Amino acid sequence: MEGMRRSLPRPPLPVFRGRLHDARTATVIGRLLGVAIVVAFVTGLVSHCLQQPPGWAVNLLPSRPSWGYRVTQGVHVASGIAAIPLLFAKLWTVYPRLFEWPPVRSVVHALERASIGVLVGSVLLQLVTGLLNTVQWYPWPWDFKQAHWALAWVAVGALLLHLAVKAPQIAAHWRRPAPDADGPDRRAFFTAVGAAVGAVTLTTVGQSFTPLKDLDLFAPRHPDHGPQGLPVNRTAVAAGITAERLAGWRLRVDGPRPYELTLEELRAMRQHSAVLPIACVEGWSKSAHWTGVRITDLLDRAGAPRAARVRVTSLQRHGAYAVTEMGSSYARDPLTLLALRLNGEPLSADHGFPARVIAPNRPGVLQTKWVARLEVL
Image (spheres, helix red, strand yellow):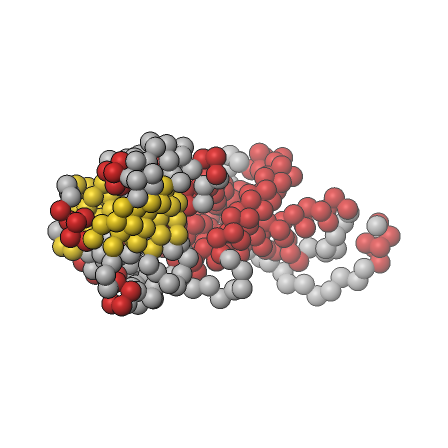
């Protein structure tokens, strides 16, 4: 290896004269980026488990606090967006190392560079595809959900390996004061990075944190824009819901004592109201006033055991989640409704007319619209 290193001719390489491509600057930006990645990873675990729970956990998932998923998913998307300018700032501080010569000095050095390549590639792909998911644009052939889940573990594993390898350098520069000569330039750089992070956060977080909705300039959803003052992801037309499909609609409840109800019969039952958020995986959310029949009352009428899960079937023809399952913790929560009204008005077609599920602490994709059947499992 030593002989090969001496024999390799040095190609013409760029010269970097900036003083901020140094270990101290990289460490400061790196720890901020690390915090953003860890927050996005932990909240992503919560989102995945609520959206696709393992079988043993279906009846154990908590339905409270009712706003729980709204907060965790909003933080997940916000931290992922904030990580993008931090990632580019981190790459700016270290990219002169790409031009070191020779490119590989030893087997250990080769493995270190390979691990950094995996880390940068996985984090960059994770953040870019996650950002595209917020606008529901999928220009790739694979399933986003599964790829996003798997890639998160690759990225975090690569990050842990990188921290282990670089631990001595990170420790040496964690609190080391910067040279006085670099102070103005360093402060200007950190200020620019902070401004970029603040700008992308403030102009997108209003889609879930409604006090900042007036600053919601670049998020794909505004919490006030949509039928009945509430956004929708999938319209009735996109789901294949037509007047013919709704003609003669009846709700079928299958259990030990199966029965059917017309819309008028549902409206004649005791109505309950709740203020609950719709919180979608794309990061937007908003609370609304819902009125309808409690799911637990419908299950009691069908003779369902208290611990039974429920399968919910929609009339929709297109798109995923036409059939979903609800654990007993959700089904028996008194806030979980088969909603018939939204903000004092009958549901619009885009919001699931004639009936839809609304439950606390539950991803929006599982708040099934155009419900036709409830099946006790």
